[in-house]
Image (cartoon, rainbow, N blue to C red; front, side):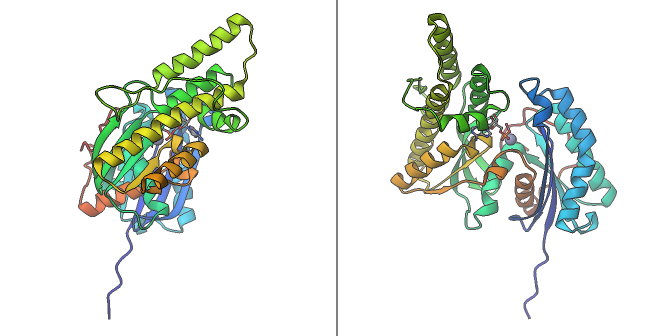
Length: 343
Ligand code: KG4
Ligand code: ZN
């Protein structure tokens, strides 16, 4: 009789920014629980994430969130095979809470510890709902802190083929949202308001870097929106916020889509994925899907809940590291500027 393979369960912890999250992942792709305590409400009054407040809240919430994740998955810590934790990049004080917690739990329960790169987690979110997806593929990672084009060569093997020279795409969404009075976080609010506006109303710039056509730059676009708003105010012209939102969003989407498709063609991959908070943008998903179809690429994207920060994606990335035998020592530390593919 064929022997049944033992299931592998990873308890994952994510505290790199303003979400306190824990999840249990079975065999790398099955989400048994995904608990997220979002601090967004707390930071909204300040117009952005306040690192000190984020760290304090993580300390308060980390234990109940982990307990809930184990309870929902109906497993005990003893039944967990390894503990995976985001150790960078992110806010150092926030990361430290997750890292210290993971080390304490792993040490106490005698379980292996696996350190996970936050962006590798975002990319791995695509594996959850697309069981057939396997490397190699190209992934656009667009979040509040990052805009990268990453070639996923194999599990845990990444090559950055494009990056932002200044602001991240999500950062541009947040700054423009603040300028038109929408508040934090800007991405989902612009996404919603843009549906009521005309995306061709205002022509905003689409930056292209001459010697690096796959890199991004969003600070010029942000300045162009601010200039437009200032000019309207000076002239006393009424500002149509929905048109600004739609035109700005279209400029970001055009750049993200165009660079991704160009890179995929150059690299000769036939699969394209998106990840990170901005990947939950409804218009980006539509435009990317159409562009991929036109160029004959298979297109993958996670559900919105797996696009923004969560621990399920960390558990998936952690599983593949665990399978490769990657283990962190008890000296694992938070690395706020951790580079992708760095160990
Ligand atoms: O991945 P994420 O949760 O955190 C980071 O690792 O940064 O991304 C958060 C970013 C924020 O800048 C937020 O405004 C943006 O993702 N975002 C969106 C949408 N939902 C979140 N941007 C555009 N459209 C959305 N629907
Ligand atoms: Zn993130």
